[in-house]
Length: 234
Length: 82
Ligand SMILES: [Zn+2]
Image (cartoon, rainbow over all chains, first blue to last red; front, top):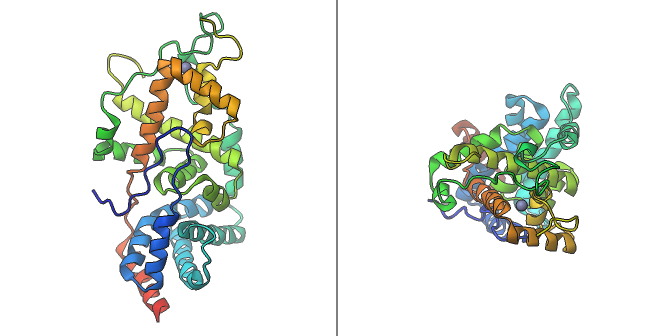
């Protein structure tokens, strides 16, 4: 497995925050300024599809999204000399792309603004786990598990090495509602931290957390449906 | 053993997991969260599965860029270098 592009693995212990991609991006920045085509190609490969997906959330048309992302890369190159490193390089890139998408959006008002998508997903009444899985008011321990979640048949470390499992996660992220999918992709796949995501998407910390929570719980559920011990229910 | 109000229940625990992992819980909520985690095997399984989900998401590869798009951008990069 390619270990060069690594700091995408999220943190595993309790309450610490995921790593900032800054250190990795500093190396990229130095290489770009030194004119390395390899570094630029790698950076494009790493972020192009995510940018396109995020921009698609605004413009709702794949050809337009591709066009906007191409423009964003050109804008990114143009502004590289003046980049001061106040945020991670990738955050800078995403901000440029989002600004271009918003401009495009204002030109074409048929599409629903992202803020509306965010608020409709956040305001929807939704719980991570079916309430039927918990004891009712008459049970011995109301609101505690009636039957807890089934353990998975495989060790997660082994699962992470299997293409099939990773593909399942990618597909599950792909079927999330748009704002949830965008937040989870930026945070857990692309490795932006919460502050960056709030800045890039122009959403509050609280909304970001609600969207991320719903997204992660849905993806967990997709994995649980596939990997739960057959002996017990999910 | 009783589960009176000050104790966290499983439904609240589940909804606070992301806030906990983000380091956003107030200190006393954090204590109640961790106390619940200590004694509840169902929630232990659930939070481990959320952590596994994050680990797996970090393995998702970026999708391919079309060769045409990449070639155009590399041209732009060469121009920029000059
Ligand atoms: Zn519990």
